Image (cartoon, rainbow, N blue to C red; front, side, top):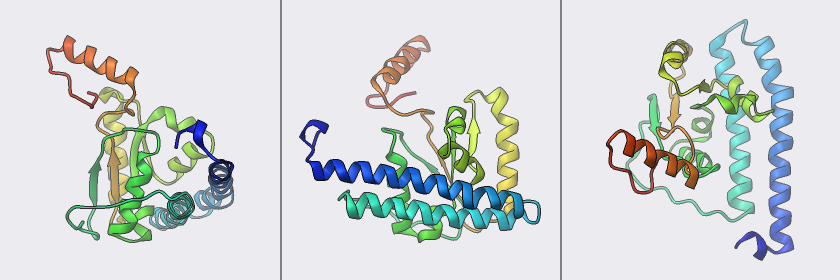
Length: 207
């Protein structure tokens, strides 16, 4: 249904779901993640990483419950089984603001709730300053990049080494090779860049 066709019940579901996400993200960051970085990080980076992974696993899973069970979103996962006890590099298209949610759905279906928490993403630096969400993801070990290799190379190298030192058994790293979500404006910009560099524009994708 479009926004104009939504019933009062559907509006209530949307508003209450957004309220839940905002409230729990705020309380989790303030009451769990901030104390964890103050009390656990100086003692053991590995213990801190495991603790924050479980905090995020519980929060993401509750958000998936709201999305799928209460709002009726249907998810079907197909493909080969994943090696659950090995690090994974996951590359995905970025079609909308919430497509990462379906990757979390895939993680819990192919692995366990813990595998939702060990998801780490490489995201653009603009997200870091978003109150609560950007801060929380940073505390959970997400890597923020400026999308300029001259400035990102040393930062990513340091980030990868820190992930290895923490020795999480099944660290899953998510990247969006397109660098941003798909919009008509970004598609036009991508096509102009392709034409300038003598490349064939990609149907339905951005460079």
